[in-house]
Image (tube, rainbow, N blue to C red; front, side, top):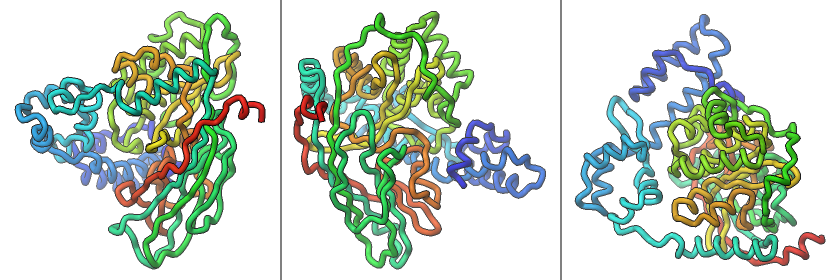
Length: 463
């Protein structure tokens, strides 16, 4: 089963497959894999690595859609004097993600979004630069941060109607369909979870404590229709004022282990861990050193599918770039490598007006218990000169979250039969036919915010 094969991603591929993949000859790479899978001399330890690589090679080119000429033309729509020389300089600086496809460089589909987000010069020349700190979403974060300091914490009651539908182009009338949609799960920052309604009627839902909680639909669909789930919950955010002098130096023994293939103490991770922490022994100070690295030196970048990246924390450490989940995984892996418990949280970031998928981290330091780190939000604050908010997202969070996943790379309940759209996380949902799992490009999804109101934190804490 592909989900079981993923743990073998750290095994190196044979040289000829690596060479074919590196120059973008994916057809040759697939042929070479098939030959080894059918060769009785192939060692058994290599078989799962080859099987998972087959699936990776099928998806990898889908995220790279522009030739350099096409990419330059796209930028020139906003910046007429932008040149190919400038583009190549950005590529050489690691600001643009690219791969070879049949020997020709192809650029990531979201390269321009990344440039506009993190490159002020490009955004200014494109006429898309704005005062980030004046944006409504940023003002909301700043207001919330101030309120948390004044009250010690805040709470929001949130009600959402989530929708997932197969695109007409991927719909097969009369086919058996299985659907897993993420729903709120038990967590230190979640309270009073209620599943209000579904359409059609759900077959089952996983336990509130499940590591990747979902609600499950199953039917033979004659006509294409959306799947809905409406839920409500309270999201609690406490303001943590941290003092390294109060930290207990006795290390906890949980959530410090490796979880192949990504949360692993490779030579790269160990070297980076040792370099950053030096002789420091205080776990809070060490975690802060890791957070600072992930927020000031690892640049934000929209990513290709995580499934196509063999070792995600190493990717971030070596390339100094990544999105919210990549940054969170690097922070988690560094913490665990240093003996500091750390774990994953993901689901949605939910404002009164919108919702979107998001990942962040937790880490444990006594006597404070579980604390939060959001390198993506912290890094954004740092880039825009808001050091107060940068500091806030080390230790504290905000009440605008929906937690569905508390662990990375976990099975769904019930099990999915076909390979998952995302084998590591479940934020938008998974859909499969009896013979095929559907990809992101086959699905439409959205979230309608039905209620987003403040709740008295003191009343909630006494319940």
